Amino acid sequence: MIEAELELTHITINGLTIVGAIPVAALHEVLGPPQRIVDPAAPAPVGHRNNQIHVYDSLGTYFYEHHFTHLAMAIAFVFWPEEQHFKYTPTQSFAGRLILAGYDVPACVSERELTEKTRLHWNNQLKGTWSVTSGEFSIGFDTIGERLKSGRRSDRRRVVSIDASWPHDPTLGAKPKQQRSGDIV
Image (cartoon, rainbow, N blue to C red; front, side):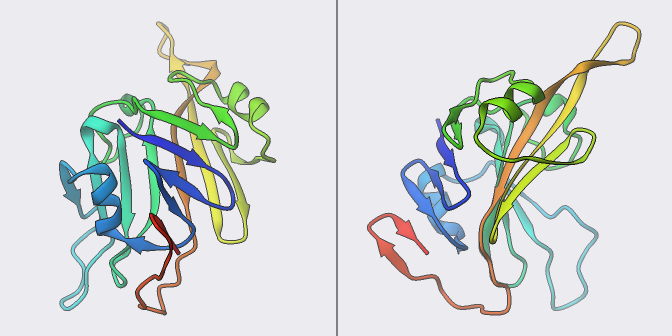
C-alpha cells in the first residue's frame, strides 16, 4: 500500500520526502520493484534512450525516469484506469492513501470536490485538465464524465489520475545529496 502526501513544496511517499530529483532506486526501495518498465515513445536514436516509466499495476501508480539523468522526476496515481488509455496505465486503481494539500482524496472523487476541498488555486487548462505550479513543483489532475447509457458523457466529471512533478535539472547530471535520514534533495 502507498501512503502519499502531495504539497507544492514537497512530496512524501511511504515516508520518503522528495524535494528534488531522486535516484530511481530510492523509489524502488519504498515501493518495491515495478511490475514493468515501459518506453512510451518510438525508439530513440542510436546512443540515446527515451524516458522510462516504472509501472506498479498492483498499486495503481507509475513514475517517470529521465532519459539522460536516470533520476525520477514525476509520479502519477491512477484512480480510474479504464479511462486512461496509455500503454503504461496501471491495470488496477490506486488503492492507497493520497493526501493532496491537506485533503484526504477518496477513491471516486469528483472534479468539483477536488477543486473545492483542496486549498490550491487550480488552473483549468482544458476541460478536464487541471494544474497548479509553485516554482518547479507541479500538481495536476485529469477528469472525465462517466459514460451514460446513451454513449454520451455525464456532466459530473470524475478524477482519472493525479500527478506530481518535482524540481529536476537535466543539465546537471549530478547525484542528489541526502538532506536528512530518508529525505533526498
